[in-house]
Image (cartoon, rainbow, N blue to C red; front, side):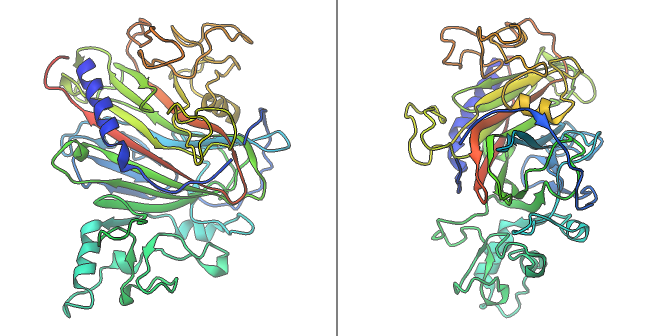
Length: 477
Protein backbone atom coordinates (compact mmCIF):
# COMPACT_ATOMS: atom_id res chain seq x y z
CA UNK A 1 0.00 0.00 0.00
CA UNK A 2 2.78 2.49 0.94
CA UNK A 3 4.43 2.01 -2.45
CA UNK A 4 1.22 2.77 -4.31
CA UNK A 5 0.21 5.76 -2.18
CA UNK A 6 3.72 7.15 -2.59
CA UNK A 7 3.33 6.80 -6.36
CA UNK A 8 0.02 8.67 -6.17
CA UNK A 9 1.66 11.52 -4.24
CA UNK A 10 4.61 11.75 -6.63
CA UNK A 11 2.33 11.75 -9.67
CA UNK A 12 0.12 14.39 -8.10
CA UNK A 13 3.10 16.68 -7.48
CA UNK A 14 4.63 16.04 -10.90
CA UNK A 15 1.49 17.02 -12.75
CA UNK A 16 0.46 19.88 -10.45
CA UNK A 17 1.36 22.34 -13.23
CA UNK A 18 -1.33 20.92 -15.56
CA UNK A 19 -3.88 23.12 -13.80
CA UNK A 20 -3.82 26.79 -14.70
CA UNK A 21 -6.74 29.18 -15.16
CA UNK A 22 -8.47 32.37 -14.07
CA UNK A 23 -9.86 33.24 -10.70
CA UNK A 24 -11.36 36.10 -8.64
CA UNK A 25 -12.96 36.64 -5.15
CA UNK A 26 -12.93 37.87 -1.34
CA UNK A 27 -14.10 37.79 2.85
CA UNK A 28 -15.62 35.86 6.01
CA UNK A 29 -18.26 35.29 9.15
CA UNK A 30 -20.62 32.46 10.67
CA UNK A 31 -24.18 30.92 11.05
CA UNK A 32 -26.21 27.74 10.49
CA UNK A 33 -29.93 28.42 9.92
CA UNK A 34 -31.68 26.75 6.97
CA UNK A 35 -34.63 28.45 5.26
CA UNK A 36 -36.23 27.35 2.01
CA UNK A 37 -38.68 29.67 0.31
CA UNK A 38 -39.73 26.88 -2.11
CA UNK A 39 -39.76 29.26 -5.10
CA UNK A 40 -38.29 27.56 -8.15
CA UNK A 41 -38.26 27.40 -11.94
CA UNK A 42 -39.59 23.84 -12.12
CA UNK A 43 -36.72 22.29 -14.09
CA UNK A 44 -36.60 18.51 -14.37
CA UNK A 45 -33.51 16.64 -13.11
CA UNK A 46 -30.74 16.20 -15.64
CA UNK A 47 -30.62 12.85 -17.43
CA UNK A 48 -27.55 13.48 -19.60
CA UNK A 49 -24.76 10.88 -19.35
CA UNK A 50 -21.62 11.04 -21.50
CA UNK A 51 -18.42 8.96 -21.47
CA UNK A 52 -15.00 10.50 -20.95
CA UNK A 53 -12.87 7.78 -22.53
CA UNK A 54 -9.80 9.20 -24.27
CA UNK A 55 -7.17 7.26 -22.34
CA UNK A 56 -6.93 4.31 -19.94
CA UNK A 57 -10.04 5.53 -18.07
CA UNK A 58 -13.67 5.21 -19.13
CA UNK A 59 -16.02 7.12 -16.85
CA UNK A 60 -19.51 8.62 -17.04
CA UNK A 61 -20.01 12.33 -16.49
CA UNK A 62 -23.54 13.41 -15.56
CA UNK A 63 -25.18 16.70 -16.49
CA UNK A 64 -26.42 17.49 -12.99
CA UNK A 65 -23.22 18.20 -11.09
CA UNK A 66 -22.42 14.54 -10.29
CA UNK A 67 -20.15 12.04 -12.02
CA UNK A 68 -18.44 8.62 -12.04
CA UNK A 69 -21.70 6.65 -11.91
CA UNK A 70 -24.79 5.96 -14.05
CA UNK A 71 -27.35 6.57 -11.26
CA UNK A 72 -27.07 2.90 -10.27
CA UNK A 73 -23.54 1.54 -10.48
CA UNK A 74 -19.91 2.67 -10.39
CA UNK A 75 -18.62 3.87 -13.75
CA UNK A 76 -14.97 4.80 -13.29
CA UNK A 77 -13.41 1.91 -15.18
CA UNK A 78 -9.63 1.67 -15.06
CA UNK A 79 -7.94 0.03 -16.86
CA UNK A 80 -10.44 0.70 -19.64
CA UNK A 81 -12.11 -2.52 -20.74
CA UNK A 82 -11.14 -4.33 -17.54
CA UNK A 83 -14.56 -4.12 -15.83
CA UNK A 84 -12.92 -2.88 -12.60
CA UNK A 85 -13.96 0.47 -11.14
CA UNK A 86 -12.08 2.74 -8.72
CA UNK A 87 -14.75 5.39 -8.01
CA UNK A 88 -18.46 5.25 -7.31
CA UNK A 89 -19.61 8.89 -7.31
CA UNK A 90 -18.42 12.47 -6.91
CA UNK A 91 -19.82 16.01 -6.97
CA UNK A 92 -19.21 19.65 -6.12
CA UNK A 93 -20.37 20.90 -2.72
CA UNK A 94 -20.69 24.65 -2.14
CA UNK A 95 -22.00 26.51 0.92
CA UNK A 96 -21.96 29.85 2.70
CA UNK A 97 -23.97 32.31 4.79
CA UNK A 98 -25.53 35.57 3.59
CA UNK A 99 -25.48 38.87 5.49
CA UNK A 100 -28.80 37.98 7.12
CA UNK A 101 -27.40 34.78 8.60
CA UNK A 102 -29.21 32.49 6.14
CA UNK A 103 -27.40 29.33 5.08
CA UNK A 104 -27.16 28.66 1.33
CA UNK A 105 -25.91 25.30 0.08
CA UNK A 106 -25.73 23.41 -3.21
CA UNK A 107 -24.59 19.78 -3.26
CA UNK A 108 -25.28 16.38 -4.77
CA UNK A 109 -24.77 12.84 -3.51
CA UNK A 110 -26.87 9.93 -4.85
CA UNK A 111 -30.10 11.77 -5.82
CA UNK A 112 -31.97 9.74 -3.19
CA UNK A 113 -33.47 12.91 -1.72
CA UNK A 114 -33.35 14.91 -4.91
CA UNK A 115 -31.21 17.44 -6.74
CA UNK A 116 -29.55 20.80 -6.14
CA UNK A 117 -28.20 21.31 -9.68
CA UNK A 118 -29.90 21.57 -13.09
CA UNK A 119 -28.65 22.11 -16.65
CA UNK A 120 -28.15 25.42 -18.38
CA UNK A 121 -26.99 29.05 -18.01
CA UNK A 122 -28.92 31.58 -15.95
CA UNK A 123 -30.37 34.93 -16.89
CA UNK A 124 -27.54 37.29 -15.92
CA UNK A 125 -29.92 39.88 -14.44
CA UNK A 126 -32.49 37.76 -12.61
CA UNK A 127 -30.42 34.58 -12.00
CA UNK A 128 -33.35 32.51 -13.29
CA UNK A 129 -33.93 29.87 -15.96
CA UNK A 130 -37.00 28.31 -17.58
CA UNK A 131 -37.75 24.57 -17.62
CA UNK A 132 -37.48 24.67 -21.42
CA UNK A 133 -33.95 26.08 -21.26
CA UNK A 134 -32.95 23.48 -18.67
CA UNK A 135 -34.15 20.74 -21.01
CA UNK A 136 -32.41 22.32 -24.00
CA UNK A 137 -29.06 22.38 -22.16
CA UNK A 138 -29.31 18.87 -20.70
CA UNK A 139 -26.33 17.59 -22.70
CA UNK A 140 -22.56 17.60 -22.96
CA UNK A 141 -20.55 19.02 -25.82
CA UNK A 142 -17.86 16.42 -26.52
CA UNK A 143 -14.73 17.43 -28.42
CA UNK A 144 -11.60 15.69 -29.60
CA UNK A 145 -8.66 18.06 -29.79
CA UNK A 146 -7.57 16.20 -32.95
CA UNK A 147 -10.78 17.34 -34.69
CA UNK A 148 -9.94 20.98 -33.91
CA UNK A 149 -6.35 20.46 -35.05
CA UNK A 150 -7.72 19.02 -38.30
CA UNK A 151 -9.95 22.08 -38.69
CA UNK A 152 -7.01 24.47 -38.25
CA UNK A 153 -4.90 22.50 -40.72
CA UNK A 154 -7.54 22.10 -43.45
CA UNK A 155 -10.22 24.78 -43.21
CA UNK A 156 -9.88 27.25 -46.07
CA UNK A 157 -7.13 25.14 -47.62
CA UNK A 158 -8.62 21.74 -48.45
CA UNK A 159 -11.77 22.12 -50.62
CA UNK A 160 -12.93 18.63 -49.58
CA UNK A 161 -12.91 19.47 -45.87
CA UNK A 162 -16.29 19.47 -44.08
CA UNK A 163 -16.50 21.15 -40.68
CA UNK A 164 -17.72 18.58 -38.12
CA UNK A 165 -20.91 19.23 -36.17
CA UNK A 166 -19.12 19.41 -32.83
CA UNK A 167 -17.33 22.54 -34.06
CA UNK A 168 -20.36 24.03 -35.83
CA UNK A 169 -22.59 23.44 -32.78
CA UNK A 170 -20.12 24.72 -30.18
CA UNK A 171 -22.17 26.77 -27.63
CA UNK A 172 -20.06 29.92 -27.82
CA UNK A 173 -22.89 32.37 -27.15
CA UNK A 174 -25.87 32.53 -24.85
CA UNK A 175 -29.40 33.33 -25.97
CA UNK A 176 -29.93 37.09 -25.66
CA UNK A 177 -33.71 36.57 -25.57
CA UNK A 178 -33.23 34.47 -22.41
CA UNK A 179 -30.90 37.05 -20.86
CA UNK A 180 -27.94 34.65 -20.94
CA UNK A 181 -24.32 35.74 -21.03
CA UNK A 182 -23.09 36.68 -24.49
CA UNK A 183 -20.03 34.46 -24.08
CA UNK A 184 -20.34 30.88 -22.83
CA UNK A 185 -18.06 28.16 -24.24
CA UNK A 186 -14.60 29.59 -24.96
CA UNK A 187 -13.58 30.01 -28.61
CA UNK A 188 -10.64 31.36 -30.59
CA UNK A 189 -11.85 34.51 -32.35
CA UNK A 190 -9.79 34.68 -35.55
CA UNK A 191 -10.88 38.18 -36.59
CA UNK A 192 -11.53 39.56 -33.10
CA UNK A 193 -15.13 40.62 -33.74
CA UNK A 194 -16.56 38.81 -30.69
CA UNK A 195 -18.78 36.52 -32.75
CA UNK A 196 -18.25 32.75 -33.13
CA UNK A 197 -17.98 32.14 -36.88
CA UNK A 198 -16.59 28.67 -37.63
CA UNK A 199 -16.95 29.22 -41.37
CA UNK A 200 -14.63 32.23 -40.99
CA UNK A 201 -11.84 30.61 -38.99
CA UNK A 202 -13.16 30.51 -35.40
CA UNK A 203 -12.87 27.31 -33.38
CA UNK A 204 -13.12 25.96 -29.80
CA UNK A 205 -10.37 27.55 -27.75
CA UNK A 206 -7.52 25.02 -27.57
CA UNK A 207 -3.99 26.32 -28.01
CA UNK A 208 -3.69 24.63 -31.40
CA UNK A 209 -1.10 26.98 -32.88
CA UNK A 210 1.08 27.10 -29.77
CA UNK A 211 0.78 30.89 -29.66
CA UNK A 212 -2.53 31.18 -27.78
CA UNK A 213 -1.30 31.27 -24.18
CA UNK A 214 -4.75 32.26 -22.89
CA UNK A 215 -6.54 29.20 -24.31
CA UNK A 216 -9.34 27.99 -22.04
CA UNK A 217 -9.89 24.39 -23.20
CA UNK A 218 -7.77 21.48 -22.05
CA UNK A 219 -7.10 17.84 -22.80
CA UNK A 220 -7.02 15.57 -25.83
CA UNK A 221 -10.71 14.95 -25.21
CA UNK A 222 -13.00 17.47 -23.52
CA UNK A 223 -16.57 17.41 -22.27
CA UNK A 224 -18.07 20.88 -21.82
CA UNK A 225 -21.40 21.52 -20.11
CA UNK A 226 -23.19 24.18 -18.09
CA UNK A 227 -25.29 23.73 -14.96
CA UNK A 228 -26.81 25.92 -12.23
CA UNK A 229 -28.36 25.75 -8.76
CA UNK A 230 -31.51 27.83 -9.49
CA UNK A 231 -33.48 25.45 -11.72
CA UNK A 232 -35.69 24.11 -8.94
CA UNK A 233 -36.03 23.62 -5.18
CA UNK A 234 -32.92 22.23 -3.49
CA UNK A 235 -34.41 18.87 -2.59
CA UNK A 236 -31.00 17.32 -1.78
CA UNK A 237 -29.98 19.82 0.92
CA UNK A 238 -33.33 21.62 1.55
CA UNK A 239 -31.26 24.82 1.69
CA UNK A 240 -31.64 28.10 -0.18
CA UNK A 241 -29.91 28.37 -3.59
CA UNK A 242 -26.80 30.48 -4.09
CA UNK A 243 -27.47 31.68 -7.64
CA UNK A 244 -24.54 29.91 -9.30
CA UNK A 245 -23.87 29.23 -12.96
CA UNK A 246 -21.10 26.69 -13.54
CA UNK A 247 -19.21 26.16 -16.80
CA UNK A 248 -17.62 22.73 -16.49
CA UNK A 249 -14.97 20.76 -18.33
CA UNK A 250 -14.01 17.12 -17.83
CA UNK A 251 -10.89 16.23 -19.76
CA UNK A 252 -8.13 13.71 -20.20
CA UNK A 253 -4.89 13.23 -22.10
CA UNK A 254 -3.82 10.23 -24.19
CA UNK A 255 -0.19 9.64 -23.23
CA UNK A 256 2.45 6.95 -22.89
CA UNK A 257 3.06 7.71 -19.21
CA UNK A 258 1.08 8.02 -15.97
CA UNK A 259 -1.06 10.87 -17.35
CA UNK A 260 -2.83 8.17 -19.34
CA UNK A 261 -4.37 7.01 -16.04
CA UNK A 262 -5.63 10.47 -15.00
CA UNK A 263 -8.75 12.58 -15.51
CA UNK A 264 -9.26 16.28 -14.75
CA UNK A 265 -12.19 18.56 -13.91
CA UNK A 266 -12.35 22.34 -14.28
CA UNK A 267 -15.24 24.46 -13.00
CA UNK A 268 -15.72 28.13 -13.80
CA UNK A 269 -18.14 29.17 -11.07
CA UNK A 270 -20.03 32.44 -11.62
CA UNK A 271 -22.05 34.05 -8.84
CA UNK A 272 -25.17 35.47 -10.54
CA UNK A 273 -26.61 36.57 -7.18
CA UNK A 274 -26.77 40.27 -6.25
CA UNK A 275 -25.72 39.57 -2.66
CA UNK A 276 -22.39 38.50 -1.16
CA UNK A 277 -22.01 35.12 0.52
CA UNK A 278 -19.80 34.96 3.59
CA UNK A 279 -17.79 32.06 4.98
CA UNK A 280 -18.03 30.31 1.63
CA UNK A 281 -16.47 26.88 1.02
CA UNK A 282 -16.06 24.96 -2.21
CA UNK A 283 -15.68 21.19 -1.81
CA UNK A 284 -15.05 18.06 -3.84
CA UNK A 285 -17.10 15.18 -2.45
CA UNK A 286 -15.87 11.68 -3.28
CA UNK A 287 -17.28 8.18 -2.78
CA UNK A 288 -14.31 6.03 -3.78
CA UNK A 289 -15.15 2.35 -4.23
CA UNK A 290 -11.76 0.91 -5.04
CA UNK A 291 -12.83 -2.32 -6.72
CA UNK A 292 -14.48 -4.27 -3.89
CA UNK A 293 -16.06 -1.49 -1.84
CA UNK A 294 -16.03 -2.95 1.68
CA UNK A 295 -12.27 -3.03 2.34
CA UNK A 296 -11.09 0.54 1.74
CA UNK A 297 -9.09 3.09 3.73
CA UNK A 298 -8.73 6.81 3.00
CA UNK A 299 -6.21 9.51 3.87
CA UNK A 300 -4.67 12.76 2.69
CA UNK A 301 -1.40 14.55 2.00
CA UNK A 302 -1.76 18.10 3.32
CA UNK A 303 1.09 19.69 1.35
CA UNK A 304 -0.14 18.28 -1.96
CA UNK A 305 -3.83 18.99 -1.33
CA UNK A 306 -4.35 15.30 -2.10
CA UNK A 307 -7.05 13.00 -0.78
CA UNK A 308 -6.66 9.30 -1.53
CA UNK A 309 -8.20 5.86 -1.11
CA UNK A 310 -6.26 2.63 -0.79
CA UNK A 311 -7.05 -0.99 0.03
CA UNK A 312 -7.25 -1.79 3.72
CA UNK A 313 -5.87 -5.33 3.31
CA UNK A 314 -3.53 -7.22 1.02
CA UNK A 315 -6.17 -8.48 -1.40
CA UNK A 316 -9.04 -6.63 -3.03
CA UNK A 317 -11.42 -9.58 -3.08
CA UNK A 318 -14.32 -10.68 -5.24
CA UNK A 319 -15.39 -10.32 -8.85
CA UNK A 320 -15.30 -6.52 -8.56
CA UNK A 321 -11.90 -6.52 -6.84
CA UNK A 322 -8.44 -5.83 -8.23
CA UNK A 323 -6.89 -8.83 -6.47
CA UNK A 324 -3.41 -8.71 -4.92
CA UNK A 325 -1.29 -5.53 -5.13
CA UNK A 326 -4.42 -3.41 -5.55
CA UNK A 327 -4.17 0.18 -6.80
CA UNK A 328 -4.69 3.47 -4.98
CA UNK A 329 -6.58 6.46 -6.30
CA UNK A 330 -6.28 10.11 -5.37
CA UNK A 331 -8.09 13.40 -5.92
CA UNK A 332 -5.90 16.50 -6.05
CA UNK A 333 -7.12 20.05 -5.45
CA UNK A 334 -4.95 21.69 -8.11
CA UNK A 335 -6.64 25.08 -8.07
CA UNK A 336 -8.90 26.67 -5.48
CA UNK A 337 -10.76 29.95 -4.96
CA UNK A 338 -9.01 33.26 -4.35
CA UNK A 339 -8.57 34.15 -0.68
CA UNK A 340 -9.94 37.30 0.89
CA UNK A 341 -7.37 40.09 0.80
CA UNK A 342 -5.69 40.59 4.16
CA UNK A 343 -7.21 37.55 5.88
CA UNK A 344 -3.90 36.83 7.64
CA UNK A 345 -3.87 33.17 6.56
CA UNK A 346 -1.29 31.31 4.51
CA UNK A 347 -4.03 29.77 2.37
CA UNK A 348 -1.72 28.07 -0.11
CA UNK A 349 0.80 26.98 2.57
CA UNK A 350 3.78 28.41 0.71
CA UNK A 351 5.17 30.30 3.70
CA UNK A 352 3.89 33.69 2.48
CA UNK A 353 0.77 35.31 3.95
CA UNK A 354 -1.63 37.50 1.96
CA UNK A 355 0.27 37.61 -1.32
CA UNK A 356 -1.69 39.06 -4.24
CA UNK A 357 -4.00 36.52 -5.89
CA UNK A 358 -3.41 33.90 -3.19
CA UNK A 359 -5.37 30.70 -3.80
CA UNK A 360 -7.00 28.61 -1.11
CA UNK A 361 -5.92 25.02 -1.61
CA UNK A 362 -7.31 22.07 0.36
CA UNK A 363 -8.12 23.54 3.78
CA UNK A 364 -10.16 20.62 5.17
CA UNK A 365 -10.14 16.86 4.61
CA UNK A 366 -13.06 15.01 6.16
CA UNK A 367 -13.94 11.32 6.16
CA UNK A 368 -17.40 10.21 7.23
CA UNK A 369 -19.05 6.85 7.77
CA UNK A 370 -21.79 5.22 5.72
CA UNK A 371 -24.28 5.36 8.58
CA UNK A 372 -26.49 7.94 10.27
CA UNK A 373 -24.49 8.60 13.43
CA UNK A 374 -23.07 12.06 14.22
CA UNK A 375 -20.02 11.08 12.11
CA UNK A 376 -22.11 9.59 9.31
CA UNK A 377 -24.01 10.55 6.18
CA UNK A 378 -25.14 14.20 6.04
CA UNK A 379 -28.91 14.60 6.32
CA UNK A 380 -29.38 18.32 5.71
CA UNK A 381 -27.79 21.42 4.28
CA UNK A 382 -26.49 22.23 7.75
CA UNK A 383 -24.70 18.86 7.91
CA UNK A 384 -23.14 19.43 4.49
CA UNK A 385 -21.98 22.92 5.44
CA UNK A 386 -20.56 21.56 8.70
CA UNK A 387 -18.55 18.94 6.83
CA UNK A 388 -17.22 21.61 4.46
CA UNK A 389 -15.93 23.38 7.60
CA UNK A 390 -14.55 20.26 9.30
CA UNK A 391 -17.34 20.04 11.88
CA UNK A 392 -19.38 16.93 12.75
CA UNK A 393 -23.17 16.76 12.61
CA UNK A 394 -23.40 17.43 16.37
CA UNK A 395 -21.41 20.69 15.91
CA UNK A 396 -18.23 19.22 17.43
CA UNK A 397 -15.09 20.17 15.46
CA UNK A 398 -12.83 17.43 14.16
CA UNK A 399 -10.03 16.44 16.51
CA UNK A 400 -6.69 14.82 15.80
CA UNK A 401 -6.42 11.06 16.28
CA UNK A 402 -8.73 8.07 16.56
CA UNK A 403 -12.00 8.59 14.71
CA UNK A 404 -11.67 12.39 14.67
CA UNK A 405 -14.47 12.82 17.19
CA UNK A 406 -12.54 12.54 20.41
CA UNK A 407 -13.41 15.81 22.16
CA UNK A 408 -16.66 17.06 23.61
CA UNK A 409 -18.76 19.97 22.38
CA UNK A 410 -16.93 23.29 22.72
CA UNK A 411 -13.52 21.67 23.20
CA UNK A 412 -10.58 22.93 21.14
CA UNK A 413 -8.20 20.23 22.36
CA UNK A 414 -6.34 18.75 19.38
CA UNK A 415 -8.76 20.42 16.97
CA UNK A 416 -7.56 19.71 13.43
CA UNK A 417 -8.30 20.42 9.78
CA UNK A 418 -7.25 17.14 8.17
CA UNK A 419 -8.24 13.57 8.96
CA UNK A 420 -5.75 10.73 8.41
CA UNK A 421 -2.89 12.98 7.13
CA UNK A 422 -0.15 10.46 7.94
CA UNK A 423 2.78 12.64 8.98
CA UNK A 424 1.93 15.52 6.60
CA UNK A 425 0.03 17.79 9.00
CA UNK A 426 2.51 20.47 10.14
CA UNK A 427 0.20 21.41 13.04
CA UNK A 428 1.10 18.05 14.63
CA UNK A 429 4.82 17.61 13.94
CA UNK A 430 6.33 14.24 14.64
CA UNK A 431 2.93 12.55 14.88
CA UNK A 432 1.31 10.06 12.53
CA UNK A 433 -2.41 9.50 12.08
CA UNK A 434 -3.75 7.06 9.53
CA UNK A 435 -6.57 4.57 9.42
CA UNK A 436 -3.93 1.95 10.22
CA UNK A 437 -2.67 3.73 13.35
CA UNK A 438 -6.29 4.38 14.37
CA UNK A 439 -6.99 0.64 14.18
CA UNK A 440 -9.96 1.08 11.86
CA UNK A 441 -11.65 -1.84 10.17
CA UNK A 442 -11.56 -1.42 6.37
CA UNK A 443 -15.02 -0.64 4.98
CA UNK A 444 -17.04 1.60 2.65
CA UNK A 445 -15.57 5.12 2.67
CA UNK A 446 -16.51 8.68 1.62
CA UNK A 447 -14.38 11.78 1.86
CA UNK A 448 -14.57 15.52 1.26
CA UNK A 449 -11.87 18.03 0.36
CA UNK A 450 -12.83 21.68 0.77
CA UNK A 451 -11.32 25.14 0.29
CA UNK A 452 -12.38 28.16 2.34
CA UNK A 453 -13.53 30.31 3.98
CA UNK A 454 -13.79 33.28 1.63
CA UNK A 455 -16.38 35.84 0.56
CA UNK A 456 -18.23 35.08 -2.67
CA UNK A 457 -19.00 38.51 -4.06
CA UNK A 458 -21.83 39.25 -6.55
CA UNK A 459 -20.59 38.65 -10.07
CA UNK A 460 -17.44 36.92 -8.83
CA UNK A 461 -15.84 34.27 -11.00
CA UNK A 462 -13.84 31.46 -9.38
CA UNK A 463 -12.07 28.63 -11.14
CA UNK A 464 -11.72 25.27 -9.40
CA UNK A 465 -9.58 22.50 -10.88
CA UNK A 466 -9.28 18.96 -9.54
CA UNK A 467 -7.59 15.88 -10.92
CA UNK A 468 -7.96 12.15 -10.30
CA UNK A 469 -4.67 10.23 -10.22
CA UNK A 470 -4.30 6.45 -10.11
CA UNK A 471 -1.37 4.10 -9.64
CA UNK A 472 -0.78 0.43 -9.05
CA UNK A 473 2.39 -1.14 -7.74
CA UNK A 474 3.43 -4.49 -9.17
CA UNK A 475 4.68 -5.75 -5.82
CA UNK A 476 4.79 -4.80 -2.16
CA UNK A 477 1.11 -5.14 -1.25
